[in-house]
Image (tube, rainbow, N blue to C red; front, side, top):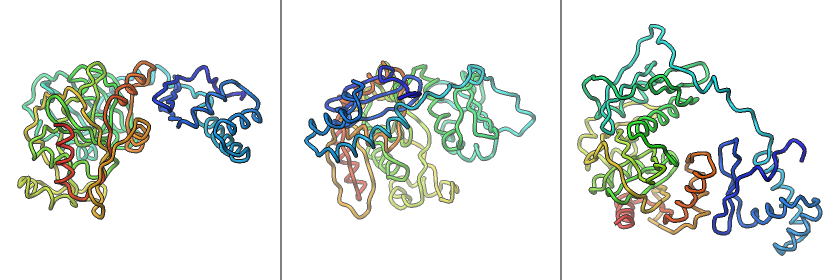
Amino acid sequence: MEGLICCEDIWEFPVDDFLVLARPQASGLYILSPSARLLWDIFKADVPFRELVREFASICGISAKQAEHDVTRTLDEWRSGLLSPARSSPSSSAVSRVVPASCGADLFVYDCLIQGKHVRIILETAELAEEIAPRLESLRHSPSAPDFTFRVIEESDGFCIFCDQRLVGKEESVTAARNLLLQEIVRSCRDRDCLAVFHAGACGSSSRCALFPAGTQSGKTTLAAVLMKMGLTFYSDDSVLLERDTLSVPTMPFALMVREGSWDVLSPRFPELQNAPIVSRYGQRVRFLHPVGTKQDGHCEKVGVIVFVRYDRDSANEISSLDPLQALLRLQESGFWVAHDEQSIGAFLAWLQSTRSFTLNYSNVDEAASIIRRLVA
């Protein structure tokens, strides 16, 4: 095990019958199934490999050959990931960078009112403006002294996002830069830290909302729009923040990007969508829909339910419950971030255990929206 980090240096979080591990110096969670958790407990005793295999086979009731195969594969995975040597972290000088001068380039400047704060957003390139500006149109405000100034600049290896003079992050793609920028704007305006961030939509009331995580083009934006039309409060269709101390969900009051495949479904509900400009984004035609009936400085007090949604035009609407292990694995698939310290990870897992989770495959968006509406009633 020379060169690998020690088991004692790993954070452990028991959840029901499975285990979540995390490395203090590297982001990410490692989810161990009940059998992998058993192997981990034996492995920590630092017994010889043959004894490890023999004990694992005995407890699991499997053959020695099968146990050796399973143990070898799992240990190889741990050595290349969980227990691999720690990489050096970025230098403090890189983290404390300040925003550089504009170098005379043409800039795209937007003054907005977001969560009750005056925000100035400065984008360095037309590509950034095409990605970000349509989401800001309903939030535009007459110029005034900003509470926060955000600036996104392009460098050779990605995009840097600054708040005032502070670097808040760097992303490789313009899409990732947009996600981080909008998240950081809302977080800064509310002056609250985030426990977690999800690739998800969210709709509900002021007291309870449904969080519906999903991958790209899984139907969450269409579902969010239909729920909004039903009278539920719209909180987000793309990124959902879970605030640290209150576990509340703030409004992300940005326009919904509606792909061409959803125009026929949503245009009868939102006539304004038919007149919205058509924009080409990565080879797809899209329109932007401004949220309606949404308090731009609002929040939801609690996530009442998590529903992992997926649109499939050939399937019947089908909902089934998930246990915490299944829910956590599904969150990994859809994408999420959790603050990387021991207390925060523990708090996040406790929150997940206490929140009901379901999976919902749907072909009829009205029926799917009605199901979610009942779940948060």
